[in-house]
Amino acid sequence: MIMRSWAAALMLLAASGAQAGPLAVVELFTSQSCSLCPPADASMRELARRPDVIALTLSVDYWDYLGWKDTLAKPAFSARQHAYSSGRGDLQVFTPQVVVNGVGACVGSDAAALEQLIQSGRSGPSVPVTVSEAGPTLAIEVGGAETEGVAEVWVLPVAKTREVAITRGENRGKTIVYANVVRGLTRVGEWRGAPLRVEVPLAVAKAGGDGYVVLLQHADDEKPGPILGAAKSPNL
Image 1 (tube, rainbow, N blue to C red):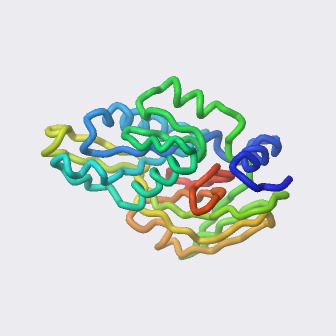
Image 2 (cartoon, rainbow, N blue to C red):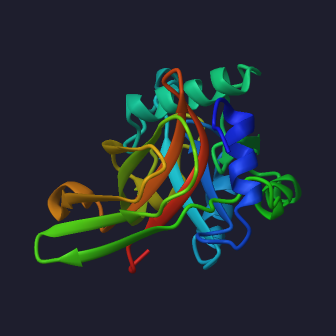
C-alpha cells in the first residue's frame, strides 16, 4: 500500500485489522478565557479515565486578550490547532474544539458527536507503538507496515491534573481542574514503514509533567494528519 495523502493514511489504518493501540486519541483545544469551555474540560476528566482512549488537553493562547492570560497555554498548541484546520480544509478554529485521531473534529462539549468520532473504526491508531523505561531513558518501539511517505514520532509531556483558580475574564471566580494537560511537543524521529526504535531522555519525555504520550502521526506538507499509532506512560 502506498501512502500519498491523508486518504491513503486512513486506508492503511482501516486495512491493518486488529486494533494495535487505543481506540482514539482525543485532543481538546481549550482556554481558561472561554466561558463555553468548562463543560468540555469536565468531559475530558471523564474521558481520561477510559482505558481505550488517550485524552489530551491543549490550552491555546489566542483568547488571552479577553482579560485573563491562560496559565497552561503555549503558542505551539494554537499553531497545532490552526495546522489541523488547514489540513482539513475547513479553517475552523474555536474553543472548545476536539480533534480525534488527527482527523475528525467537533465541538468539545458535544458528547454525542465526540463519541461518534471515537467509535469510528476507520481512523483508529493501528501501527504498534510501545514504550519502556530503563533508568534515565525512554525507549520507543514502532512496528513496521508497508507504506511510502513519512510519519513523525512525537513525545508529549503530560501533567495528569492541573487545578487553576481563574480571577479575571469570562470564567472569573471559577476553579477548573484540567486532565492530561500537555506541556510540550517534541519531535524525536521519522518513520517510513520499517520498524523503528527511538531513545529519549526521560527528563525530556516528562518535562513539566508527570508522564508522557507518544504519537506516530502522518505529516503532509508540515500539517499534522492521521495519528497512526500511540502509547502513553503507565501512570496516565
